[in-house]
Length: 489
Image (cartoon, rainbow, N blue to C red; front, side):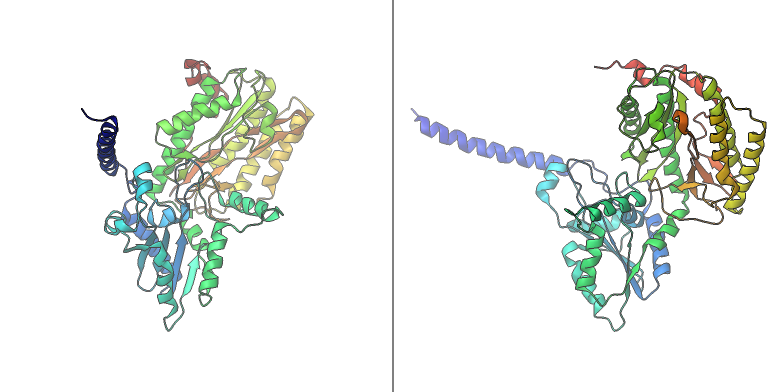
């Protein structure tokens, strides 16, 4: 008869073997996961063409060094920086891209494999995948991150000292644009208990400390100019992001009822975005009922809607690193009342006057002047219900008399995309217009926003399928929406 302690020892040995076997089987299964390791949205050739433009811009006596995004904080999915993704499409944390202007060669530096993390979270491209990375991405060389300094030393030893180009502007990551990234950096700098440098600033500081012989040049203007004109594939991505934004707005119109909470439309829109392949938000949802619309970036979503108010909904997804930005307003109770009808109709006719004149090869200021002439004619023939409304209308029209040269903001890989001010529009540019009419005395705020693509002969409003007219909005609002099919728990 076996002694109990012998049985326990025997059982322990068996369990250890089973555990090892089970872990091996699990590891095998995990390594075999069907995880896309490189984007299918763009071929390697498009990334290579972008890098070729960088070589042309920096010349043969320079190198460019671009830092990728770090590991995400918390349980959130990794998203690459726009600048890094734009040049190589590689989605791996703590990666670096080195572009040699003389050899016209691209080297990506990747961390070494973390097998334990991969067994938990899935495959991530690493230095050990060098051959696979080159095959998938078209990158010339792959090295390890800890060898980046050694690579830079080789350039520092040359008889001639190459300039080192790197973006001096903050990187754009999840739901972020440069203007917000700069604001965050300013807030941190102003905090007497913080004051730490931004990650990209620390990176450049280390480069200067370790390689003071490199003259540092700003790569941001080069990238900004490239990103201003979208390729056909980029436009296709923006179209899809716009489509999802529009579908969410249409469902928002259908689902809106008095007594609804603002955040309920946020949840409904997220369902549409993620169901259709979005990887996140382009920006936090701006769903503002009644007086909350007076704050253009109100995002708390904590108010209950009232039947006599207008609702503003401004929300869009991040679809494969490309954004949309579309806004609509509608009456909470489904029908525009007298004051809503008058103000919204006046605003809409002014808005359409801007859209109608957008075309390439014409100074932006001329487009604004043409729109202003139509607005002035509209003002002259409109009899407003209240003096406050007339004052608000005149104030809305007034800025167009002295054109600013800006119709709205660019959009692409960021919601407020890079590109700066241009004198004339050109085919491939994508932007939004979003003028606002405000009646401060009654806390009334009216704003629409549409995605505009400049074409060879004129422009295309990508978000045109989402109704702007009173009749079109009221017709949609008669239909049942997603929230009508699901009761609150």
